[in-house]
Image (cartoon, rainbow, N blue to C red; front, side, top):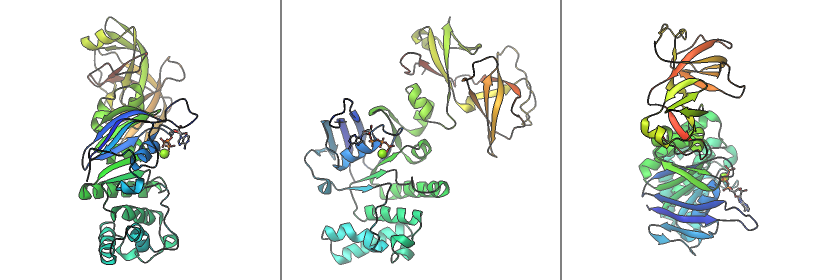
Length: 372
Ligand SMILES: Nc1ncnc2c1ncn2[C@@H]1O[C@H](COP(=O)(O)OP(=O)(O)OP(=O)(O)O)[C@@H](O)[C@H]1O
Ligand SMILES: [Mg+2]
């Protein structure tokens, strides 16, 4: 077990003006499951490879258990990588694949045997140990790859999109297996994904990267409730947050004509315009009923936004209604989550209001959060 500390760690590839990983500072606790997430090319794999010693660093330091890793060879770092491509040896059985690194490290035969058996038990691979990768399913191969990392009993696990080759259903079940396994083993883990749902469901904390720069490191709840900028706000959450650039006059933001009063201190920090963000669940339908059986409820004195429905997604337990504010330009979209099924249809017009205290406010020029 170990702590990991990135201290302004930087990686710039030869011939590139911009750093692929730009001065990242990240303090990872012993036993923590930290997820690195961000769009393609933002520097996730490079960050992980720097930690594993597979990529040199051009600035800053990386400490494992307080020890600077500069000059420490990858195989001396005691870090086990699990990649997207499992890269199992096709001619070896599952057991031999798992034992391979230990044989190389001159671990005794009996010790190897017991570690492989233990990992196989944890991963429910007992019955499959004599099979070769060719006769294993994707999920089983993935577990062998995990087993290969576990038997090493490393200080740190580095996992780079290990689930992306699995189909959607298997991904969901394997995701909870990995998270559960990590909790039981308590091995510090840095896990890379571009899937925000994976990030939110697996990590103790999630680090959001953009263009090589760290945007925010927080618990999943904090990221969702308090995104530090519009990038994080739109990256985290599915369906995405609705962001609307709005003029502010006398402390009130005008969102497609809907008056959204800003808290006094937020208004004081806001310039002439802000970006206002609404999560799908932060809207409720007023006036004409939504057909969800709740009945029509009109709220006098509350201005509402009329939206014309252009897509309805019914997922069974909940529905998402996508619409365009009446009179707004084509590109404007608002997403509304309804708890139950809805009878709304494309072309219907509904009135919605935001729940008080659930609006996110960002600076229009920098995109930085200005609400609490
Ligand atoms: N060996 C290399 N030489 C030059 N540039 C590289 C090299 N490896 C990565 N890059 C660049 O560094 C940036 C970060 O790449 P990286 O592979 O870390 O992204 P990523 O976040 O893992 O993306 P993805 O989600 O697509 O895997 C990209 O712009 C990429 O093109
Ligand atoms: Mg990558």
